[in-house]
Image (cartoon, rainbow, N blue to C red):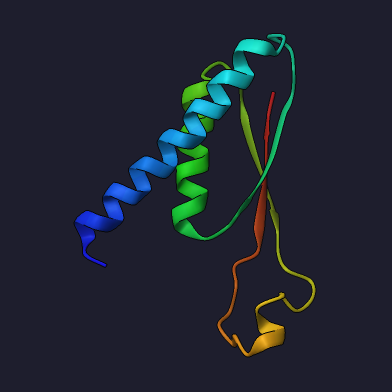
Length: 92
């Protein structure tokens, strides 16, 4: 995959997340807490954080790492690559 293809897919993914999060923001009270768990892989994590910050600009973002504590589903089928785990994103 070329860098342009990757950038295009990353932008589309972020836009999908932004659309969903903005829709949620419109329905939620201003004092609501937002809790999202996302993959810690750079692509997913950065797109999620960017979309959340854009949809909820007045909220403070707290990040809580959630490393994997056991084998992943893909590792059971031969994937030996190290996985970064997940991150809980809390906005208040």
